[in-house]
Length: 293
Image (cartoon, rainbow, N blue to C red; front, side):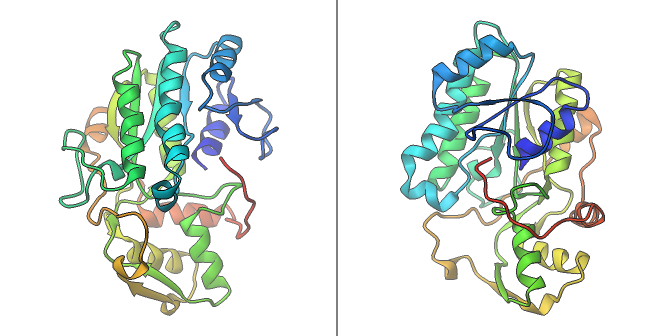
């Protein structure tokens, strides 16, 4: 989702080379495209040598938090080795890189968190993402890491979208269970893409938190989705995280404090209502098209 948002936004002003595991780009956009696997250093080196980018943005990630507990090798290869490969391929040219990280590098006991708060992931997904961001920040390259959380938006691939799931289920009058004890600040993917564009245009490097304006739990998020899309909120049932018996532990009071990026660059934090209203006005489609972006 974020890769698609960045590609569409940046292609307006820049020449963009999109990469993915597919033979061709899965969404309609006139831009350069190459099939590439970031777990394979030689593939990265060949494409870097051919394209000679001015910036590299790594939106690739293994984001299945429960899956990471059992498929540890894949999670490590994508989230940790992938960024390691990218910085190795970019050292000769000293090319700037942007890495996307997560609030799951924190334990969720005393959130929301600032950039300098101690990290302590409580699941393997968080461990792999922490290794990836460290590889980038410690690379010696002009590096930027944006930690974000609860990313949402509309895209060609809706399968992993919380908003799509809520809208789709409630539209079909199906009840859903949503946890009321996990807190964060839901982040509109379009807003994060805008911040990434700003970082490129201003030459911004360092570690920054970027999230939405509202610090809420997942139940409150679902209720706001129902309100904006005019769906029945009584179909949403509050449950505890413990009742779901998930494989991976979740940080309960997580989320990000974004004062640093606001004070330094005056960026806008979108509220959940603002972002959802924008999605609805742009005719958010309740469709699913599986992909591995």
